[in-house]
Image 1 (cartoon, rainbow, N blue to C red):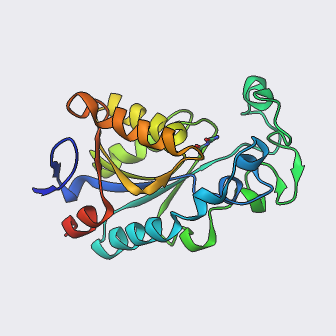
Image 2 (image 1 turned 180 degrees about the horizontal axis):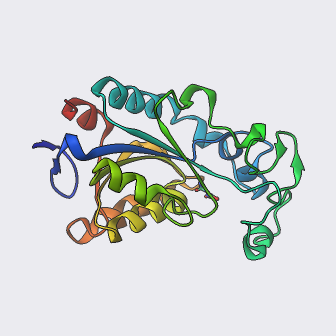
Length: 220
Ligand code: TIU
């Protein structure tokens, strides 16, 4: 047992039961012409966290701790895409439409890929998820149970959508969750700040937050 300096108080790390979860660091959210841009967002903010996500990823790899990547994506026949999700917000490009990086958010298409700098390596788990949360309609819960993981460190995008949804799902399932502040981003700076504040409020009601150097320094 070792502590990682965190808010609202130190995180009681158990490295034998810990994994890193990198949420949706996909071209569709970070590059022009993808899903994030089709919703009207300035996607340039997302690219700026890539070096810190990579540093965190490399820290976990060097420590020999499990790494899990998630991808928000759908089957080519759209059978896992509720119409309510496809039509929401009347985006310029809907999920499944042909865009500059292939069909938007469809498994196997170039835009759906994880950014090359952050690509999974052999032995790392990749969870394809049709929802915002990574537990809904995926084998994530079973995989974590099999591996005896009880603590999750989070990175990825966007802070208040897929990251926060997954942290809330994980918290309700009994996992202790820690969000790395520099390795997550939103299209809206105020929403990132608010998500961080609400996660750690009320004595870590959803989980802890920590700076990247304190996490890396704490790894075995
Ligand atoms: N739109 C937005 O902020 N996020 C998403 O649609 N998905 C994720 O957060 N990955």
